[in-house]
Image 1 (cartoon, helix red, strand yellow):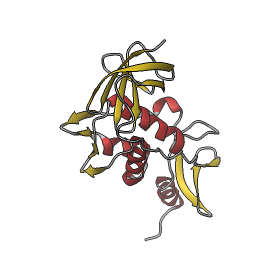
Image 2 (tube, one colour):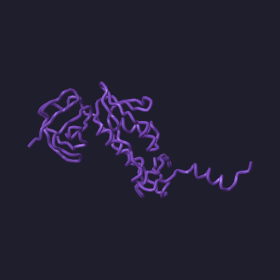
Image 3 (spheres, one colour):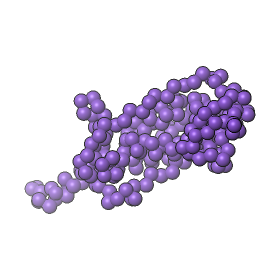
Image 4 (cartoon, helix red, strand yellow):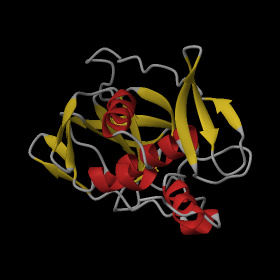
Length: 204
């Protein structure tokens, strides 16, 4: 059976990434994360990876590196060792989107990750633009006894907890700072350390 020009054209279009009409239609779902024992579960991990059109292993490797922990993909979920605020997981997913999904030329998500002479590139199917993917600085784990009660810390708030406190992740610690916003630079005094949870007050 000889295919018509129209059927060949339809088949060709079916194999081409369909550009989005605007970035407004590209909505990354909110991370459904919760703490389960000594782990944090990202319930809709597979859904997020699917919408981003990225390999699950690549997304997982990024999240593990940023959180400085170990974990695994469990079906449609991702499980991380340690307790992490959902707001932090969401912040890291947004960082991943900025680095590995959104085109810096046209702002659309119609992109692919390709290797060009061993350099990882982000290539856009919508505008044809391409750029090397930024290499994020590796996290250095501090000594376990770094944070002690009475210590003075200079911090940059990373996210906000459900109660409205600022949250900073440092190594194994989750540090809470009252009355602060993401991006704000603060100096605090450690008032209490409970396992990996650190409570603080503003230092003069």
